[in-house]
Length: 341
Ligand code: NAD
Ligand code: DAU
Image 1 (spheres, rainbow, N blue to C red):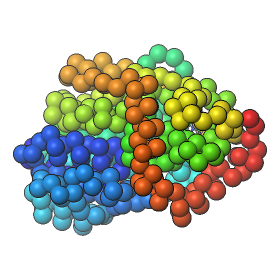
Image 2 (tube, rainbow, N blue to C red):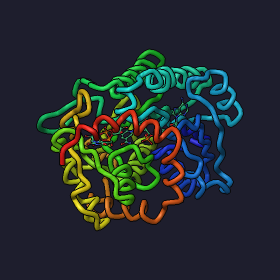
Image 3 (cartoon, rainbow, N blue to C red):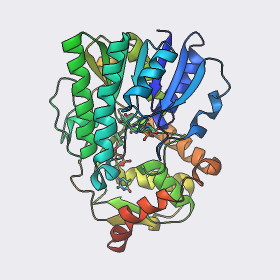
Image 4 (cartoon, protein in one colour):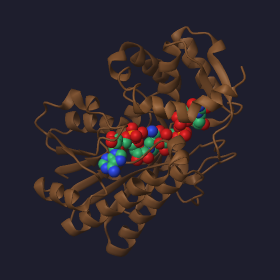
């Protein structure tokens, strides 16, 4: 590995990975390739923007010509694909972009990567491909039962990676992360959305009964996990990156309010997300055997995260305008009108 293309590197987890790789591996050249959609944010890369082993190229992963040009220009030998439409609620409102980026984009990267003769292709995927799991822990060879258009698009991307490994012998590895949180996360996802809304004393719309369970993974642990699997993962294999921090949504919500010293009267129970998965939970055993371990306990990570949003209003305040407010209206106006305390 020498010249690594990180797609979606201006997003939440991708940028944590870029920051981590640029500082940990001065001998690698890290090229971030990102379309800068509503979720992509060049501010996330400010900490590395002057580093010699870092470059940025704007482009769409589904645009074959630009992908080909960038692979040639930087003599890319490794691809790590973070690029995705990533928000479940948006996939329910409008699935088109999810198919374009998460399925077609993954295919174009694989296909151009193969023609270009790259080495390793690492696909960043999600626990959502397993679907709802009532009890126990999802293992890597469990079947796929994705329930949202987002989850199905990620499963589609993964299946294409598998096909390129089996058919063309491409060197691939797949990572499946659990719910990730931390600094620089676009404030549409539960934790940054609720933290920034609570800071403004606005209502927190909890879907359904709030008893759904997610397994929370701190973003730096996720980035280190992808690094470990990129280097040590066996070709053709998939690995879970589990946070091993299962929490009910309502408990996460209460903890955010506690850290901020805000009242629980901000909580509103609103009509549920359509097709809402009740619980995700995975075993991390396979990645642990390769030396990865999550470091952050949830309470420590959550406090660090909420404090970051408190201290970095410059980052999120300007996001919460324009298109963001349109999405807020579509997603929450009717729900909040029908809410209960
Ligand atoms: P994000 O939405 O914050 O960032 C996505 C990035 O991809 C943005 O920078 C965006 O501009 C870019 N992008 C979108 N469409 C593109 C396109 N067509 N071409 C090029 N770039 C494009 O997402 P995230 O939360 O950082 O997630 C990153 C990856 O990790 C995704 O593949 C996601 O499925 C996966 N994942 C996320 C989580 C989580 O909890 N956030 C958990 C597990 C896995
Ligand atoms: O599990 C991994 C996945 O985690 C990733 O693959 C996705 O990219 C990422 O967005 C995330 O998906 P979720 O749907 O679990 O995350 P979200 O933050 O949207 O929601 C977390 C939980 O909180 C979920 O049960 C829905 C609930 N929720 C969310 C929002 C935004 C609410 O109750 N109210 C809300 O307003």
